[in-house]
Length: 74
Image (cartoon, rainbow, N blue to C red; front, side, top):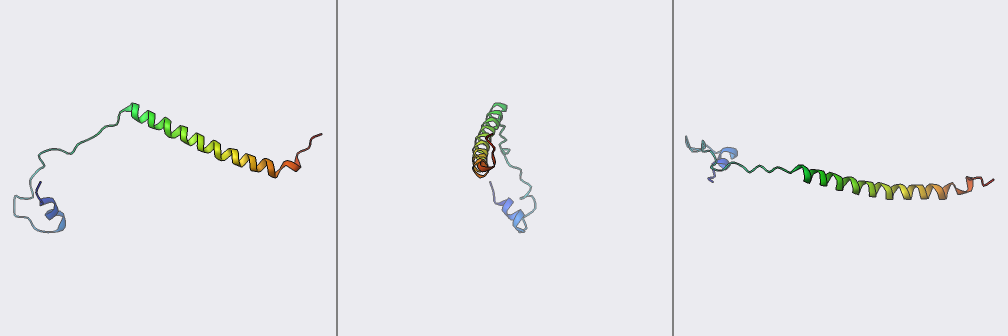
């Protein structure tokens, strides 16, 4: 690959016809399968559920300790 792209974007003038070269090999395009997407989605969802459950548990524990004297046991 020539430095024609560098010349074109850096403001240097190229001789006529030099910058009109097309790449020989197109850029690779990768596709992620739907199974990989689904597994990733489930994994992040499971992780979010665990983190939120742990956070809620500490919140409820703090609230219960704070309000334990307000509870009537009649």
